[in-house]
Length: 222
Image 1: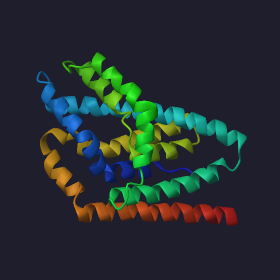
Image 2: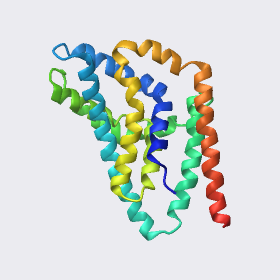
Image 3: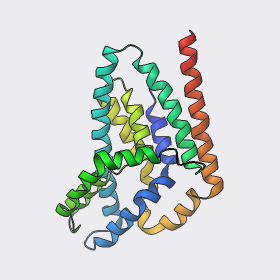
């Protein structure tokens, strides 16, 4: 069972509040640091770099998934159950009822991020368009439970290309919030992190998780 590109985009859009909390400050400071270019250009390049890193991750993960699916016929169903479970965890995480994805982000920080972040010294200061793009690509590997959940979807894509496109769709969903991070972040962040907004969006994740688990169980019964 594959997750559609629209679902990945919607997940990115709904998780924009979390994205602003994690990357909004980076995007804002990047725009302030770059004085020779228009802020919107710098923001676009930063997010484009982040999108490219997501696409690469999706490509690698989907390649692994395709290889495992050929060897194990039950792999797809197992991933469907995991997708449903992670949707539930994301919902609780968004609503801030529990730090259900903190362990995943800590694991990502230990395995990946603490090594990649050292590359910062080769990019700073951000004084060219190329560096802005590279900085975004670097920070695209920042440990994030939502990104890892999207990668789980990529793991069950029918091809490496579909896995990359799934992550591109997810990244595009986060674009609106982070593109305006330098100018309207405070207002947007207030709305996305409002209690009512978080509960509403979190519930969508939770019920979508139940939906995935139920339809996967029906496949097993049939």
